[in-house]
Length: 540
Image (cartoon, rainbow, N blue to C red; front, side, top):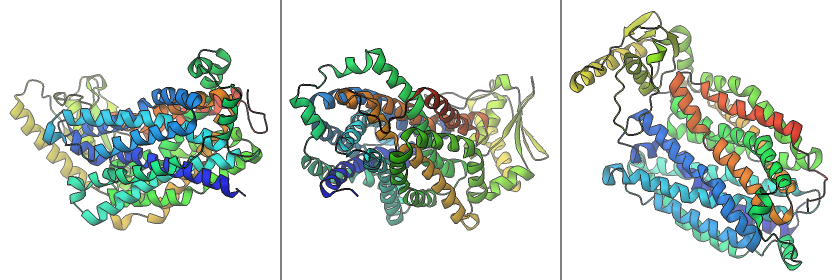
């Protein structure tokens, strides 16, 4: 049981952190809408990749936030850092809801959007380490896994809250949501900011920090002590590759990439996909506490690495099953009438246009561009020197070389080619969107819940493990950097990297190789080189 005073500490710390994660993940939940609002000047594939890159930008700067606020937290205290990070996060999120779109202010819109995402990332970089450290330093012996697992629920609950607000707004506003209603969830952050600041003002400083400060044992140079001394730096590196990198990709694959997969690859409508994802989060979230508590009995290392290994071994069958149950028409069409791009592989370019000016005029680019726009999965067949063609079942449709064509002629030929291919795809059974009547909602919900349970295995015990790996006097700084490099870089860039791999190969499952590879790396590094901390005294 958790006594009353400790329940108040956990509740106050967790609720503020839930709101901060809500702010941060609104963008991820609305990436497809935001791509149309802020990246309207480029082609659709490039726009979505840009939207994911802007999403990832917030993750890219999280390690820098960890350095800035980790140092502050180890020197000035956990509570003061809480207040600073929540204010930065809340204001940055609310301002996104007030930001004019691309059609109003042009290229300034995405620039300002990315700037606000960077501020969010800096704030979040200082948030997690403080919350985890604060709760861990209140936990009695033998219950650190249980106590900190409540903090671990906050990221998922923040995502869940963002999905609920989005679903409510979509339901009330209908088509207006994509036009202007998407701003409402961001503007709600003004209210959450006021609540969060009030909650955090009620908190007292961590008793462990107060005692350490009174005895003069605090670090005078947390950054130097954490990263310029090899014994501690070695643990930082091992905890990155042997714990947080794998935890991060399992987290983002099981929650964000699963949502992207449903909407972008399987063409499930956004409302249904968000509702199913919210259901999976609701059913899976209690397992954070289960696995956090389990780590107090059998160890943090065993639970986290088991989650990474099981996820890596089962992602392919689970995502293929997701296709079968969410959009069986795609699977059936692939079996009956597989789509193949027959082209000279050396002439194909990656369908990514950073400035919106590139014309993909080679025949291979014309063929792949058409399939990328429709989101149809395909395989590749190398034909050196040949003009590219798209084979749909037994039919073949020749593309054309457009490098020497006038712009008007190229546009007309592209439109005619696209119309011909789209008609053939429809005739071959490839759907423009998932048929709601053919979605097996129960099985989709079950698969999403399993993916969330994997998340709880790797994420539930990670805070206790990281806290115990580092000395108290530099704990905030030392644990924050590997956590935010792992989650900010390895995890945060997962949707972008995986979607880009799918766009390049045409294989809707190819993006899974990224999380699988990183998860297996963590199993090896963590298994052989990172120590178990359960039952061990804190490092001095």
